[in-house]
Image 1 (cartoon, one colour):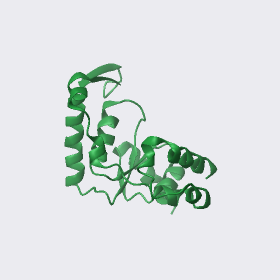
Image 2 (spheres, helix red, strand yellow):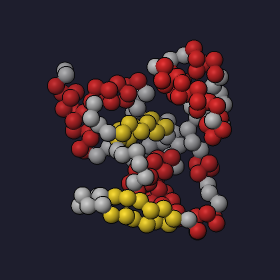
Image 3 (cartoon, helix red, strand yellow):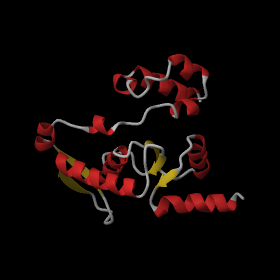
Length: 172
């Protein structure tokens, strides 16, 4: 709890997060359950995702991936291609019913991989709260985070959800 409270205080002081945390005081962070404070953070607005068109036309990103082959390869995408992919993902998430009322727990690598990058940007277009959990190796901790942070949507590959379901089944 102390580490999470410290992280929240750091976020509170960061210029990028100040707009999203404008309804929260440092006293609230100090005196309340940090998990309750997390729920008070404003979601990212779709307007904040707008980027200068010159940057979109001139920039690109190189992703590293091992994909299904297990052999390292590199993928070059222009920024407009990344945004186009994210918009398509966002449309899919919105069509599936994900909205600003949802808290979405995601699993996966926290690195500059094309899939995670697209997923996070796609989710951001729905204005939902994104809870990036990482790998699914400690089922008890993950399920506690999902519970404590009130995630009502889990966005994960079956290889991540099956161990969680098996753990739940075995701990009944």
